[in-house]
Length: 178
Image 1 (cartoon, rainbow, N blue to C red):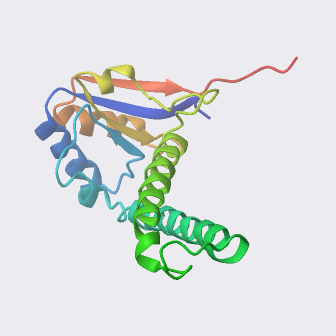
Image 2 (image 1 turned 180 degrees about the vertical axis):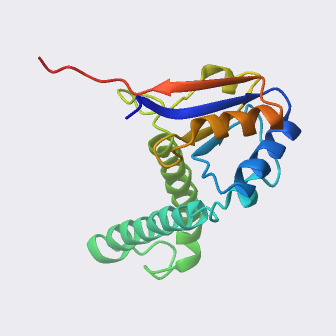
């Protein structure tokens, strides 16, 4: 069994990379991931990615902020220490709205920031998952799992036909515990 874990096809042009994706999919070769230095419109649908669940997470974080603000205000101003200020009732909902809005925005923004860090392995102590550092600068990289696609010569030929300027075989790193 080969030590090759991923086959990386490097492209200089996004159109060549999209053509390479088409060629690989025509030959039923599964693509692990694609790394680009800039967003490319329509690549998610071409690779078959599902719609992101981040809007649902943002809504949940915002709802948590709203409930937290309402609970804190209700407990402090109505239940624990009700005060009669100018004849207003203790439970005056319009007075709660600005603080509920602010905590909704605060929880939503911090929650999405932490979600972004967690999802992209950017927390301190976590190694980032970068196949090739040039993919963040000027190269478009198609990564193919070598274990799911047992014909590396065929994949190399397809990538060269599509316009790949370089093809790399990333090898598995074995760690010795002795």
